[in-house]
Length: 516
Ligand code: KIV
Ligand code: ZN
Image (cartoon, rainbow, N blue to C red; front, side, top):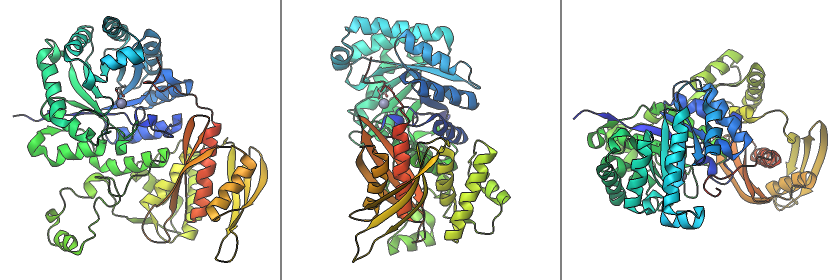
């Protein structure tokens, strides 16, 4: 039996972006898109162009920068949304796709759409017809398919394929499916729909019951799906989506079982994971398969002994296969500009202009003064902040000093940049982080609620940089800020300021699934 290809459709920048606080700017999307292209993802869903002018511009920018992967934009099933998608994508450098969705479950049709099944049927057909006039590559998703009536689903899908839909994507929108049943559902749809062979069958699973990857793989193995929609680190609404790294490595490691190949350059998986985590502020749990810090760490003596004797005793894939650079010391205090730039290139990092490289190099020198050994992870943390900066942020950190101890009340004293002026901010607090946040808040007066504070070491050892995530909520919006420094209090201040800047950047965005 010949080996078939499994198409990898990444929706980190669309469904992933719907996680609270994970929204991305145009430049952040460009950086992620370049990394996805480097990883040889087949389809990159860059966003939902009708959700905001900002996302329209982001999708347009991604389409204008990506040559190899297909760039897709999500649209609700109406002409206005679809036209917005076409406008964002039509000047693409490479191939592009319009992805239309419309709910087909009785619950969604009655309660969310307030439409009859006949109206949904008509709207599905007409929307695909509209898109097809402008774009040969049209994907259709019947939202909440796993809770839809099979007969109705078959009617709708047959009709949209007749209108020219080239990919049919079956979403398990609320993570309700179980593997065997979901696999059989895909198989039955393919068997029952007379023109099913005219489309590629795809699945899009959510992880509410922790089965998104299992459901996707069952759809492939039992149902014959040949496209999986997934996200880096499994980011996505609620409990997230199918994790890209897990399906790709499952199919590769168990090729004997799946008899499928993907296009993915797996050595780009860990860099992609780091980049997405740094940009969104969603930290990867240490025991996460493939990309978690412990995924290849063998703590127990028995395992270590086994791995040293023969790697295969306890490892089914190597750390190098997925792009762990084994904590290589790459640069130090004496490294020059060229070596720095060369290593960034090897890591697949491109900064937008010369000024960006100069600033990043200066920060690298500052870091090398504090830390003798600079690892790849340090470089990635450092440039993540540089690349994310636009230069016209509301707030910046000029300098700071703080103190704490067993017999004194912790305090923080900072100098902040507010547009072009500098402001002093001081406060005491329950601890140095609390004092720092109170001092910043004392001048910024954002009134935001702190939802999450977390610190992670970028590399091992006490001289590692700390990477801090701060999640703030205000007026219904949630944002994540990330900061890295060898001093975790400074990292905390940077993270808080980054979150404040995101709150200040008034991004108004619709969630595609909550509005009509
Ligand atoms: O979960 C879902 O149903 C979706 C669709 C828009 C594909 O994200
Ligand atoms: Zn989804």
